[in-house]
Each structure stands twice: as C-alpha cells, then as structure tokens.
Length: 225
Image (cartoon, rainbow, N blue to C red; front, side):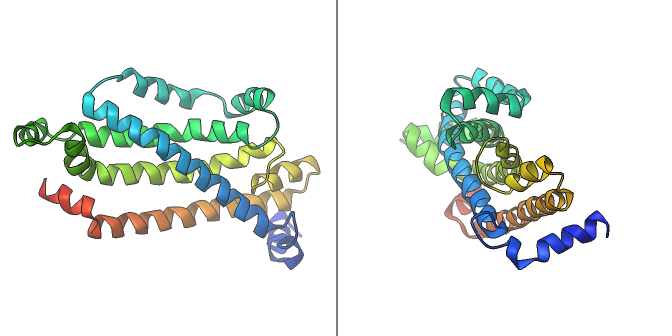
C-alpha cells in the first residue's frame, strides 16, 4: 500500500475525525485562528492605510511593513514565544504581522489612486475630510481592499500550519506530530486538508467579492465617481 492510498484511508477513517485531536476539531481550530487573525489584521491595516493614503503622510510605513515579509516565520515564532510564552499570543502576533502587508498595500493603493480632481471638488462643495474618505475614497478603493483581504486570508490559512511548531491547535498539529513519528499519510492528509480549506475559502471570498461588487453601496458609488 503506497502513501497515497494510506492517506486516503487516514482521511476516510471516522475515528480520525472525532475526539479532542480529531480532524473536525483541528479544522475548526484552524478556521477560528485564521478568522481571528484576519479580523485583527483588518482593524489595524485598513484604518492605517486610509490615513496614509488620504493625507499622504507616513509613506515610509508602507516600505517598513512590506519589509516584514522578509522576516523568517519560524525565527519570529521562536523569539516571540520566549517573550510571550507558549500560548496563542506569539503565533497570533506573527500571523498578523505577515498578513498586514497585502491588506495595507491594497487599501493604500485604492485610496491613493483616487483622482485629486474629485477630492478637490468635494472640498469645494463643503465636504470635510471624513466625508471625502467615507463617500468618495473608500467606495472607489473597495474592490482592491476586498482583493487584499482575500489574498491575506488564504495566506493566513497556509501560514498558520507553521504555528504548530508551538503547542497550539489547528491542522498544522497533524504535520508536526506526524513528522515526529514519521506518520507520512497523516502529514500528507493534513496537507490536503490545508489546501482544500484554502481553496474553499478563496472560492467563498471570490463569490462574496463578486456579490458585494454588484450590490453594495460602495461599488455603486465607485461606479459613479
């Protein structure tokens, strides 16, 4: 029996899906970690990018944040684990750090590319800075923002597997634990699960992006701007 048939057998056994260390629980943990990371990322990156793009200040932040992509993931996990302990805090911080660049870049690009003629016209008719951002710049930037969030989400799902280097849950647990005992069918099965989850989330995000693009207030305003 080759490793692929053993992997299918591992995925098909009901006992592997149940219990505290089962696939179902690990899958839910992985999705919860990823959603929490995405939420924190958006709360940080989108307001910061709106400020930078609208006012044209602190542009060096974009370069600094993009440079964070070059940092070694395992190195950052190890360093922060020594500071924050072996809980969820260290991997969450690292995952947010690596997820911020695509959201920040996409939001900044969308805001910064709004025509200056349009924003000057809005000021001329009495719009304040917040009204210009909310009614003109954000609607125009909405499609690239969604694209950045989608890109970040799939990246987050893939990168969280590395966090199992620490004693946390998620699908990466099967990879690290399987490597320790050379359980290659378990490792390959976990890889399939991560790939499947990434594809499923990407399809859902793409569908959501299309639906919002057709029906949202933001897109309707952007088309008129």
